[in-house]
Length: 115
Length: 112
Image (cartoon, rainbow over all chains, first blue to last red; front, side, top):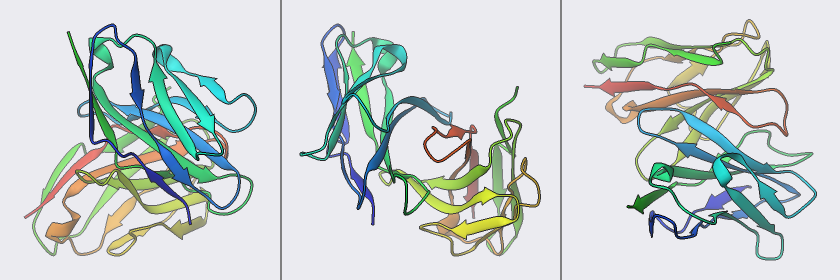
C-alpha cells in the first residue's frame, strides 16, 4: 500500500522568510513524488516532481523539494516566501515501475504568508 | 489547447437523482482519473482509466460508475445520489506513469 502524510494542517510564515511544507511517504518500491498547489476554486497545479536522479528538485515559482530516502520525506521549500504563495499544497506519491498506477494524495497543508 | 474541461461547474441534486459529470481532455493523454475532495481529507481516487476501454476502481468507487469509450472523454456517473456524495469532484489526465497530472477546475456538487 502507498500513503502520504502531511503533518501540518497550516503553516504560517512572514513574507521574505524561508518556508518549508513537510511531507513523508510510504511505498513498497521506488517512489514517484509530486507537489501540487491549489488556489481557491481552482484545480491542482503541478509544482515539481521527483522520479530519479538528484535529490534536490527545482520546480515552478521558485519552489524546490528535497528527496530523502532514509527518512522517506519529500519536503517542499522556498528560500523567500511571497504573499502570493498563500494557497493549499498537496504532496502525492505513486509506486514507480510496478504496482498501482494511481496517485495517493496527502490531506494538504494550507500555507499562509503574512505581509 | 483547453487542457482538461469539466462540466458542469456547479450542480445541486436531490437524494436519489442520477447525473453524469463530464470530463474531456484535448492532450491525447492515455491516463485519466476522477477524484473527490473533501475538507481535511485531500483528494481520494474514485475511478481511473489507463486507456480507452480500460477502467479500474480507486479508493472510494461505491456509488459511481465510469466508462472510457474514447481517449478524450471520461464521464463519471452517480447512480443514485446520496448526501455523502456532496463534494468537489476533479478530473485529471496525464501522458504516462511518470508524468504529472493535469487537473480540471472541478465540479461542485451538493446533494440535498
